[in-house]
Image (cartoon, rainbow, N blue to C red; front, side, top):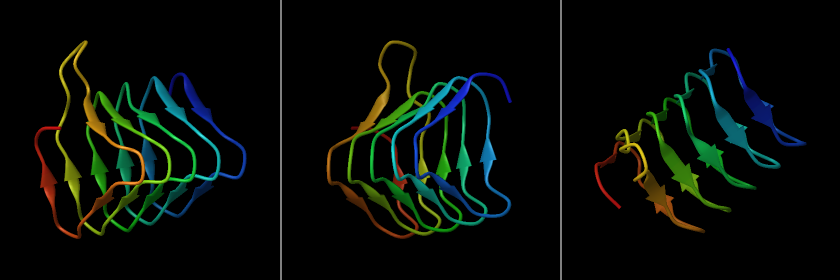
Length: 98
């Protein structure tokens, strides 16, 4: 869609959805059926396992790993949901706040 910036070395597997106003760093890997919604910022060397749902206004810092089927709740305008540097979000987790 509109205004998606992908860093070098990004890998998007089949059925990945990217919406609008997204910034993605280097070496991002999105496995099958992953979803990145509007106004998300994803750092360098971030991995999404299959089926991750990154809802709008989420910032993921460098070297994070998001497990299979995890859901990252939508952040608020001016107050994004932040996943810290090197974080590991477990399989099936539902992240609602930072």
